[in-house]
Length: 388
Image 1 (cartoon, one colour):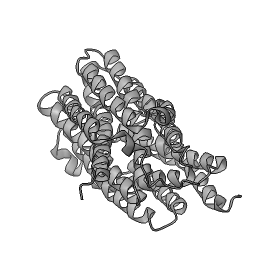
Image 2: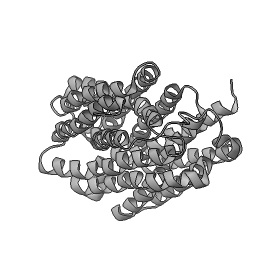
Image 3: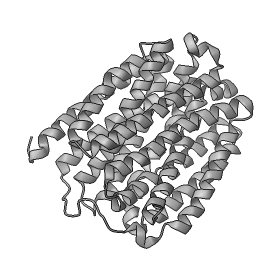
Image 4: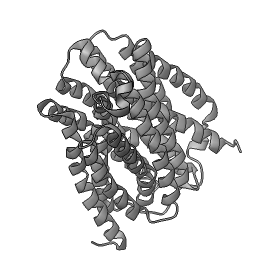
């Protein structure tokens, strides 16, 4: 049961958990930083965008380096770099220093996805199932990040949450050194060894990636603040900081259901069609977040969590379908650059909208940004025969 493939899956999945947990600490505490440093949403949005943009920017060179260094080396660079970034943030005394730390955290974390996903795509027989487990771990990270950050800030210091994830990174570094062997990284069971990469298919796929990534960057950054500002229903029972953490955690935990559904369906049905259906479901649910409050807001947010995160095992397995073995590392690199790099601009753009109008206005805007992804997905379905 605990063969080397399962151990590697566990290490990679835990690394996925930590990468998202660390990246969610700052968005969860935006209202705390606003109060502590007297900053507006536009400035805080730029600070958040620094981390998220760098999160995407490093993915392309990471995908290229994967061919030369291998996934194990990149995984170690991510773990060590993220540890250093966390230390920079913990020792910071000004918004500028925190922004530097967020940038270092983003560029270090950007290495993870091309390394981790390429490694798994080379090792797993049931790819959608394996990526669902990997994605569920990421959803747990998205859920634990806000919860731990809010509890640490409420009952101690926001710096404690970064210290916790640094400790986990150190443990994972030693586990990677011991259990991931170089010969295992380039192992057998490669997916679609003879597949040739189509530029048209990849272009359409990348448009869906940009659209979903931009929506993700916007709603994950400002959803905690939206919850923190609620004063009706169940929300009135908690402080601003705890509201931002607890209810965001609930949404990300619901994403685990979506991950499991995506993994199950992705191994049984056409992944192109599934991706279109998922994007179509996200559009109205994203818009609803800006037009509801109290229990209705919580319910629509949980549904969005299920719908959004079901795309991840489907889209990541679809990329493996569309790429050759040789192109897969760079394929994942470009995908995550577009998702988190261009999507990383969403916090800055959304911050301007929040400052000029309201935070609620962000979510209908993000739903509109999903429409190009739906159109590209429909074209990708039609292109299966080799022509539009």
